Length: 294
Image 1 (tube, one colour):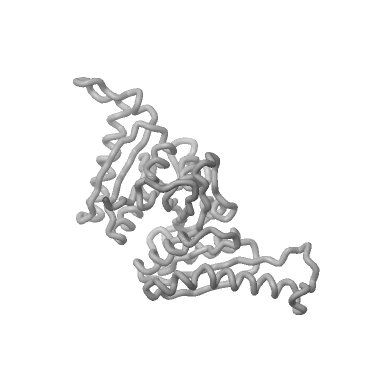
Image 2 (spheres, rainbow, N blue to C red):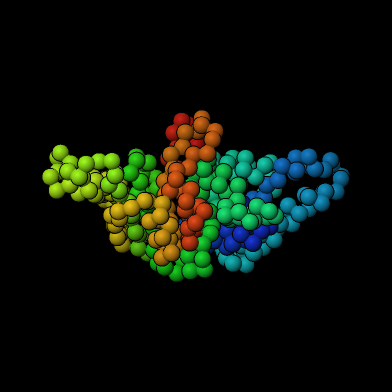
């Protein structure tokens, strides 16, 4: 069975922005779209046979109905399914991540949480999901894909090839440029001269970053359709560099390392900064260890 692109809606403006983005993304990759609304109150308000739904249940079913009609209006050829889930939104979406090709959410929720930089549901899902998660946020050019560029952050720790594959697939499908960025820094505590390189420790660290960037890209590029690639080595903190470069990107992609038995948030500093401050949608692509996805 083909895995769907799943989008969570909650009735907020941010949720409807995520819906529009998800419709376009599902059509781009020829995936079915699954629209879900989750509320823990559904389990307590489920009507007995012959009873009328409660007000809360009517809201949930009306919301996914409206979302489905908006999706079909935006793309009449897209296969759309909906479901109201009787569970906490975080738990429901994490369960959806086991059977979804990707998850899409907005960056803010309803009510008081809308005043935060990032909603707690979006942060928790991005930090623990077992499939790629896209948090839809940013300015108008970034949301509407006008930059013709996918931005990939290549980390200095082994994160696996999943994020690179995801970014390559996005750039190829969108027929746009892929900017692969590897930030590097020269540790302040090191001496000016590195024992193996008389030209200085900064040259050593830059050369090592260059090698790591090549290793992350070369093997996958060899077996991938041609893509317009721009590689960049930039000195400085990775989170600041990538946040700044999202101003000229339609999507930024970063990796995450998952250990399924670890129940806490599993999100690095760079991904965390992007989820709060990026000017375009953010894709967090996990490398999962400890089990096989259902």
